[in-house]
Structure formats: structure tokens, C-alpha cells
Length: 357
Ligand SMILES: [Zn+2]
Image (cartoon, rainbow, N blue to C red; front, side):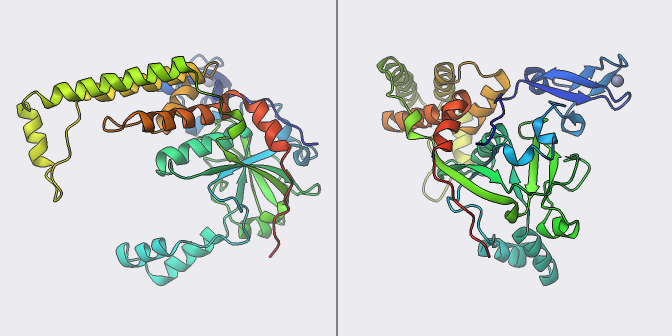
């Protein structure tokens, strides 16, 4: 049986002082909210800049540091591909076209890029790192419409991982390829995350380092409860507010500023309607309400991260979109607030061996 490590989303980080090398605790709230990113070092009492460049390992006793313990730990990965990890990872034709026709890359450069892309190492991390990675992809890569899969990974018992860990900031880790690893006669490296699940250890490995995987589609239906009528009523009340704000807007002649905005946004199909700012405010409040309902117990930073990732309904939407959004909110929130149940359901899925080739 694989060992699960305790799950904790963005609570406290460690920052290394570059002057005296002391490791300092910093709450995730301060990490994301102190505007000038300056803290005082407990060691030398001098101020220093915190941030991704000086992130330190959160848990110096992390069991993932032990070479012998590595294959006994559960590792995680999120994808939009149920067949992960595939034998090949071809570069999309549209991207090759873009590099050739739009970016005017010479053929040799495209070929080098293609080889690196196709041979990139596979990244495995803690449960938190896998969920953070999914939230980032939903937010940054506009993948909110895609289906995601959470994979649980068992490493080969004789896996050979480089001893110690690399710092994502200063050594090749996140972009390491299969060639780099096989040249060094290893199956993978550990590296310190500076951006996702900050301060945790991830692995970059060759595909052959993976013994087997378990997979589940997320959100997990078993963890989506019936919507409580009180919650539905409250969401409908927010929508009613939005409708009222929009109706009041229509009956009002456009202000000078709105007329200007209409003129500058003239499109072939006609100008998009201008939505009143108060309508967006009401929807923002609706998201805050859902967070109070479904993200209880999370740190403020983890809550903000979740809210930034999940796209809110728009003023033009209606009850149907709101309810679909609420279901998705509840389902994805369960991944953060009920990790033990997720891990249990996932651990009951059949093991699959990656195809060789
Ligand atoms: Zn110091």
C-alpha cells in the first residue's frame, strides 16, 4: 500500500535569507498580501525580499528526501488526457505552423524545440502540487471547459532518483528532458517547487520510472452533494440582483463615458452591450458566498487561488449557468477540502501499467 502524506494547502512557507542563509517561516497570507515583499530575518534581523527566488523546503523532514522511501509514496499528476502517460508527446501541428509562419523560426530551431518538447520529463508531485497545477491551467491556459483527470502514481521499486534536490530557480529541473536524465544514468530528479505547492518537492522522471497509475475524472461525482435549497435560493437572489441592475441600466440613457466605450468597441456584428460594474460586483459577491459555503477551513491564500481560477458566471448568463457553475465549484472545492476522501476513492481504482514503446 502506498503511503499518503498529510495534505495542507498553502498555509505556511519558508524563505531563505540570502544574507545569513537562515530559513524563515512566512504565512501564505503574508506571502501574497505584503505589497513590497519584504520581511525581517529571524537570524540576522535584517530585512530581505521574499518570493519564488528564495523559497526554501517547507519540511526538512519530508519523507520524499529519502531514496529508500520514494517508491513507497503516492505521487500525483493532473492532466486533460485520460491516457497519460503516453509513449509520445507530439508537438501540435498548429504550434509548428505558428513557429514557422508567424514567428519565422528557422527549421533547425523548430526541430530542436520539437525534440525537447517530445522528450520532456514527466512531472509528479504531491497531491497539493497536482491540484495547484490543475487550477493554474484552468486559469492561465483557458482550459476551464476541459475535463481533468487526477492520476495517482506508483514508482518502480528500483527507481533511481538523483540524491538530494535541485532548486527550480537555479538548476535545470522543470524543463529537464529524457536525454538529460539518461545521460546522467538516472530515472529522475527531485526539485523544489517555487510556484505551485510552494516549498514542496516534485519529481521529473522518465516514463519508465512509473510502475503503474490510477485515474479518476474530476470533479468526482461521489463528492458532489445535493445542492441545499438555502444555497440555491441565495444564488438565485444574486442573479435577481444582477437582472435588476441590468434592467435599470437599459431604462437609463448611456452616460458620456459609456457612449465613448460603445464607439471604441464597434465591431462588425454590432457593439457588445455594456454591462454595469454593479452587476460584476454582485457576481463577485456570489463567488464569495460560494467560497464561504464550500471552501471552509482553507487558508485565505488557497481560497484566493481557487477563486481566481474558477471563471464566474457573466452578467448576461442566467440561473442555468449559475447552477452548473455552483455544481462545478462544489465538486472542485471538494478536492481541496476533502483530500482524504478523494485519495480513498482514487486508491480503489484499478491500477494501469503504462504502455511500453
Ligand atoms: Zn538573515
